[in-house]
Each structure stands twice: as C-alpha cells, then as structure tokens.
View 1 (cartoon, rainbow, N blue to C red):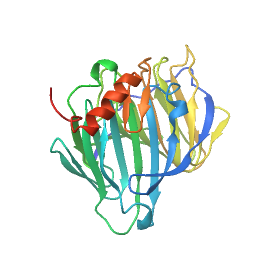
View 2: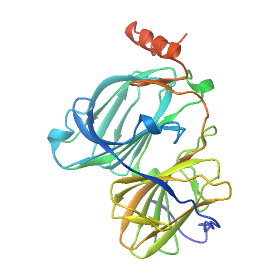
View 3: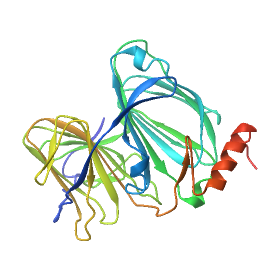
View 4: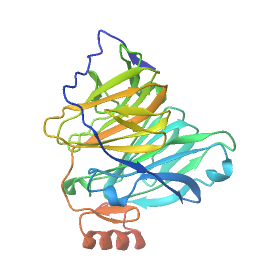
Length: 296
C-alpha cells in the first residue's frame, strides 16, 4: 500500500465548511443481467452534481444478486470509474483491453466516441461490494478515442492524518497527496475516507465545485447535520466556503466526490450521454450499424 505519512502529508485547513444541502436515499434497482444495486446519484441530480452523472453502490453476499454480471454493452460520451471494495470482476472491451478488478482496485474507462465492454464476476461465492461512478466528458472530448486503465490496490495512494483518519486518494488531491488519476477539465476529487470513532476530517474543495459524500459504514456529522448510513449528502455551495469539515462519533467510512461543473447540456439515453438529442440519435444509429467503435 502506498501509505504516505507525515511530514509528506500536508494538513488541510478549512476556514469555512460547506453544510449539507440535502440528504438523498438511493433507489434499489437492477442492471446488467440482473445485478442488484442501489442507484445513489440518479438522473434528476445530474445538473446539480455536474460533472457527475450517476453513482451506483453494490454490495451482496448472495451470488444470485451479482453472478450474471454485466455482459457486453455499449457506452459513448463519458467515463466510468469502478471501485471494488471486495470481490473479483473481469473487464473486456472492444479496444482489446482486459483486466481483473480485485479488492481495493479501481478501473477507469473513458468511453469517448464509443466502446463495447463486459464486466463479469470471477467468483461464485463470497461478497462483492463497490461503486461505479459516471463522470461526464466535455463536448470537445466526447468523440475522443476510448481509453482504459486498471489500478491495483497497491497503486492507490493512501495517507493517514494526525487523528488516524485513513484516506485513499483515487483522484485529485488530499492533504498534499496526489491521487492515482488526474483529469484536467473536470478536475475530479475522489476519496475513500475511513474515520475512527471521535475523529474529524477536513478536505479543501474549490468553491465552484459540486460535491457530495456517500456514507457506507457508520454515520458522520457535517456541522449540525447527521449523515446516516447509506445516505448521500449533497454539499451546499457557498462563495466563501473553502472545503468541508466532517466529524464522526463512531467508526465510519464514506466516499467524497467533487468536481468542476461543465455547465453544458446533458442528453442521455441509457448508455449514451451527449449534448443534444441529435447526437443521441447518431449514437444509437452508429451502434445499430456496428459503427460505434469505428475509427473515422
């Protein structure tokens, strides 16, 4: 594990914390070939949480709820970030990429102009738990070539604060530690934070970024607002707020996600996310004609 200890770690000093604007309960659903999951960030929140389009949380000890996985399916116009807390999932795609996503690993895929891929479990029992986040691409980047990278557990930088809070930095930066991925346009911050009982954690977030947390162990507090287990807390945007301060009376774990909004029109039809209905019709037509992944 790439654990970064002080003095390399730089304390994040937040002068004015964001508050919780809204608590959101995820919607139980299924996707792929019947995988049970909770859709935390749904379509009605896409403009509010721009550039993020969707967040799915999955976690089950019952193989019947995940074993069929996600057979071949297309994407165009955005990026998928899959974070596996526990389990084994095999990725294959039309660009010839293949990888095994395991405990603590991250799969970052840029669909760009088009990719067809599958995500299939490589386990017949045990727990499968993790998240998939959809990150929008700017209009200028939607038709870029597809791209893919696997990060193993040991490839994700970690830090431990003076209060014993452990932070896995998947993207962006925290306490002076750069994450495994950086993106210039949307500048995403993606942290997995583990808090011991009685600790606090601060994270700098630019005032113009949209941000939220999702608690998946225990519960935390932001200001006077408790954020219970399995709740998404959308963080209020204030011009003077420079980050967020989070406290926990009990052991807790959450993901913190923030990014720079694109401010563009969002047109979505299933696995295609573009800027207009005309572009959606073109994506559907390209897929039907076998041209989705073709190079012009």
